Image (tube, rainbow, N blue to C red; front, side, top):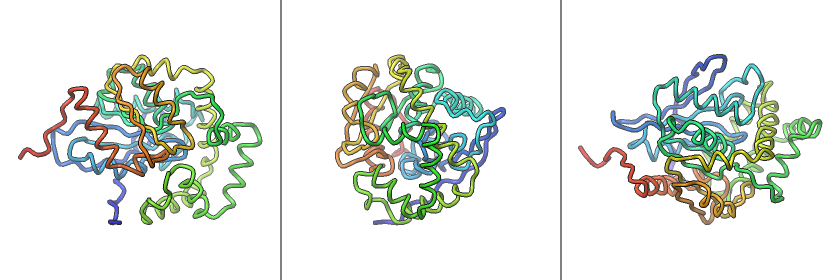
Length: 304
């Protein structure tokens, strides 16, 4: 197992009354096309490190920490709804003057990316969704935990109880929930996750961001508006599901194929909820295939 690349460097970016931390991949080509990567619940911009590296010859990639996550401070109004997160992502694209972008989203980030692509087509050149958190009311144990976290009293108690466990144990639990094979992640990446858990334990807004964003997902599910936004998306779309995803049912692939107009829908075997971390090479290959299907050409990385 080769040593993974370092996490991409980042900096805070001011967006009106909010501030977000943005990591930027180094890209050697002036004609590289802009891309933006949006993480899932309890994740961060670092979740995209390897995929950004694989695509860095073709894309000028940036990854954002949503407000309250990663290195981003909480929003001043404490609004963690899908709508509020979507507005932040749109502001970032506009602030950078980089649109339209190749937009990537995982889980909660997939819901945000879907809403943005459905309402602001001018900002999205292509859409790549990895286990997107789109409404599915069939009972499953993973989503049931998210629902429990939104209940008054229960969520804060569960988060406090979880925080008493060693960081290594919490990370192992996350890997077992989100990966088909938890042993496949490089030990350096596991240590990065452990160190980040320890860092976030010292932040007063850590549990707030997790619980309030969970409520935001549940609210979006109940409204069922995300599938309506999906039906409005005009950008070429890649939707990736993991056969062993315990949080997003891979059977939703059939519905995604019907709803997204210009879609390539893939269910990956031996993959869980975080395909961009578990199989980044496969995700990169499927992204390029989606662009080829849509007759979108990226810069020729073999030239020169």
